[in-house]
Image (tube, rainbow, N blue to C red):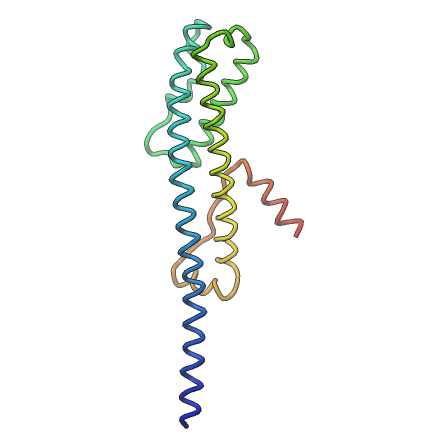
Length: 176
C-alpha cells in the first residue's frame, strides 16, 4: 500500500514537473513576442515620423501634394500589422518617386532622411524576423502534445505572422 502511494506521488510530481516546464516555455515565448511587438511598434512610429518629414520636401521639390497621401489615413486604432502595411506602401511609393525624379537626390535633407529611413527599415526587418521566428515557436507549442493541453486551458491560439515573411515561412513548413 505504501509503495502504491509513493508511486502515485512520483507520477503526480512528474506530471507537475512537465506542466511547469511547458508553462515556462510558453511564458518565455510570450515575453519574447511582447518585446518584439514593442520594438516593431517603436520602429513603425519612427518610420511614420520620417515619412511625415519627407512629405513636405517632396511637395516643395515636385510642387505636388498627392505623394504619400495615405499617411493621412493613419490613426491610433491601427494595429502594428495594418500600420506596417500602410507604411510599407508609402515607403515603396517614396522610392518609386525617387527613381522617377533624380533631381530629388540633390536635396541633402532628403538624402539624410532616406539614410535614416533605410537604417530604420533594417531594424524593422530584424524585429519582424525575430517576431515571426518566435511566433513559429509559439504556434508549435500550441499544436504539439503535451504543450497543447496548457494551450487549451490558457486559451492560447495560433498567432499571425507579418506579411513580408508569411509566404517564405509557409514554403519552409510545406517542405518539411
